Amino acid sequence: MPTVPGPSTGEGRTSGLAHLGPNWFAAVMGTGIVPVAAVTLPAQVPGLRTFAVGVWVLAAVLLAALLAATAAHWLRHPAQARAHLFHPVMGHFYGAPPMAMLTVGTGALLVGKDLLGYQVALGLDWVLWTAGTLTGLLATVIVPAVAVTRHGYPPGSAFGGWLMPVVPPMVSAATGALLVTTMGPGRARESLLVGCYALFGLSLVASLIVIPLIVRRLLRHDVGTAAGTPMLWIVLGPLGQSITAAYAMGVAAHGVLSPSYAAAATRLGLYYGLVSWGLAMVWLGIIAAITVRTARRHLPFSLTWWSFTFPVGTVVTGTSGLAAGTGTDLFADVAVALFVFLLGAWATVLVRTVRGLALGRLLVPAAAAASAS
Image (cartoon, rainbow, N blue to C red; front, side, top):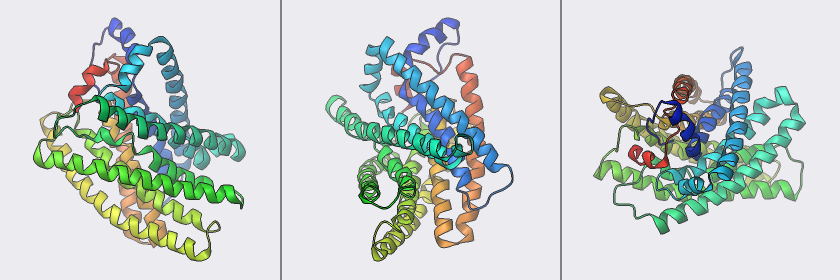
């Protein structure tokens, strides 16, 4: 996500291809969450599902294109690719490719099946979930290890991007719970559900370590650069995704665990979701105020703007889950309102990204990304 405007000449565009970073997968995440959020809303309107299918196709095409481009990047520019991994800012965004795969995979099962058929969509989801989960676990281990051993971060340097490598297991937990409901009885289904809870706990603990560091920066240091302000929205990601995961695992537990344990899992998901939803709303209010203040001064466009999409989308899915679990109109109304905001943000950022890419302003060296944090 972090980047700054670069050259707009033809030469700039050509050289920019050598600097393709993992932050570009945020565009897939932000696009892929739209259809997932759309079909899980408590209120459905005519044409919404058709729209969701179309956006999912766009996300799938973007994912395929970026995976191919990334493979070519590593083959043709291996030194630059390794430099991204060891960069103090760009390296954290190696958490984006796993989440992109997981999101598109879930979209395949929820809406892509309308085009592909159920069995093909299910198979695609399994492939993307497996790849996303394995690479996500690698990112959760490798990226923080590199950060600890290679970078001497000064006090107050924490930013939203620090969450990127530790959130993928939470996305795996939420999306894996959906796969649990497609499986027949047996040890494999039980193992997957238990594994989802383990992934949930891993990501939750890691997020609880990072989020206070970000809050501490806001309270004791500064907000950071204007270009980096949107990344404060990333904190909504682990909050919203954990609500979604807790609810989804509670639903999946029925028929897998004993009735008493399944009931406990449902209650745990509900109680956890209610507490975390309150925290998410407070954080949403804080960062909205910060963003408005920054925009009044100057909020330059960069790929950091994709932070306005995926994190909000996870809050939409989490709120929709609470609406289904409680039957409360409050959650249903908030879910719809947040989805409308998500649509506006996604459309705006998509158009600005296409225009910025056409002008050659977005593919820049990773060194320039540091100014966004």
